[in-house]
Image (cartoon, rainbow, N blue to C red; front, side):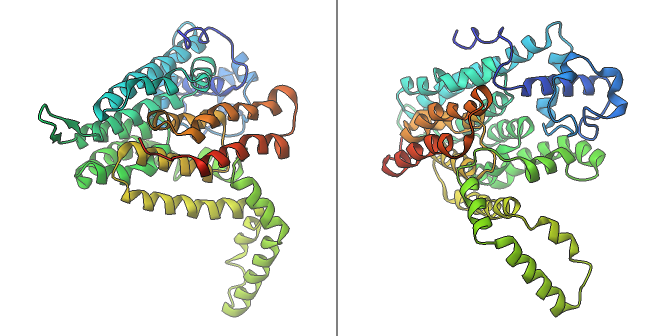
Length: 385
């Protein structure tokens, strides 16, 4: 009911759903949204009121094929925005049902699921703003459910279902790319890594192959997002400022000059100079950190705690942390009653102040969000169920 009350309302805090509908319309018209940005002349006949409200019309889409399927379906229905928000809400309610099943299978008090199901951030971002993350989060919960052993009447754990978990995992990746990082960890937790990865990675590869072929590599929208997007990253914001303060970029440029002098390669390395600026250097360092936490996650044996810990670490290392990104962590924070992440689901709403009140994010809003979270992270009990 909390979600349904928001579904009929217009978009206010985010306009991402407008881009979803545009991408769906472009797809249904037979064009490729991965190579043609909304501003492309070829798409001029499709332009309407939705197009006029779109931001970033120069950037092609970044959304995977399953998400694009949902967008396409909603774009063909009589009330596209209402239809899409209904699809996202149905996925979110389904995710709540899967979370309840996960709590019961694990022997966790079912009432803990309320920390997710009744969380204001969740129904605001799904029922209100219609974010596609709801599809991916539901699929991730389904994967973790299949990887969690159920107990027989005698109390002996029953074998998990790696094949079904792989299907859920593939659906999550095809809804949004975040679950890619969890595939190695989940493959080990399922007990049959080869089978799990063959199914999950294989299905994802088959779905992405036409996209990669059409774009002749990584879709340009994803490249642009990775290089240019940055907002409210808890480690990124102080890191790039520190790199600027210590003049890391000029020092690396001088090092590159020395390397060219030593090797005699004078022009082949010139493409690196435009990449030497603090923000991109910070993203590169944090990218190394993401690889490290993904590797470390291979030691995780508990699917609930491991998934929550991995997604939480990746979020902290991200350069962009929008409020709805927390949806990937909150189901597992709810089951473990992780105080820091549950508190952050309320604190993160302060990041909307720059949009609705014209208040600068840095430094005070940023500190108001992340300092209480970090304090709770230090003193809390962590991911113990």
